[in-house]
Length: 105
Image 1: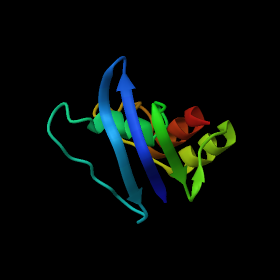
Image 2 (image 1 turned 90 degrees about the vertical axis):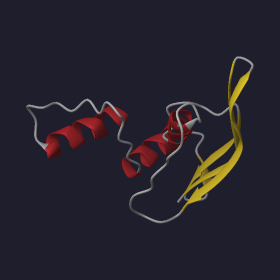
Image 3 (image 1 turned 180 degrees about the vertical axis):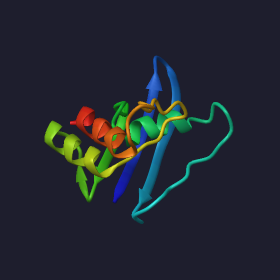
Image 4 (image 1 turned 180 degrees about the horizontal axis):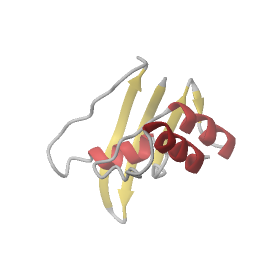
C-alpha cells in the first residue's frame, strides 16, 4: 500500500502539489489523469521517490520511507512507465525489466 500524508511540493516559491492525501491499496494498475500542467508528473515523481516532498510523508506498507534500504525495497514493488519509456529495443522484455530493476537498486 502506498500512502501520501499531507504531501506538498514547491519549486522555488511556486506550489505545484498542495497538501495531498492519497491511498492506493489495491494491487494492480492505477491510472492518474488530468489536464496539462495539473501536477501529474510531479505527483508520480514524488510517489516513485524520484523527487522529495517539500512537506508531508510518503509511506509504503504503513512505514515512512526514510532510508536507502526502504527506498530499494519500495522500488522492487513499484513500477512507473514514463511517456518516453526508453526501452532497449534489442533486448527482451525480461532483460529490459531486469535492467530497470538493477538500476533502481
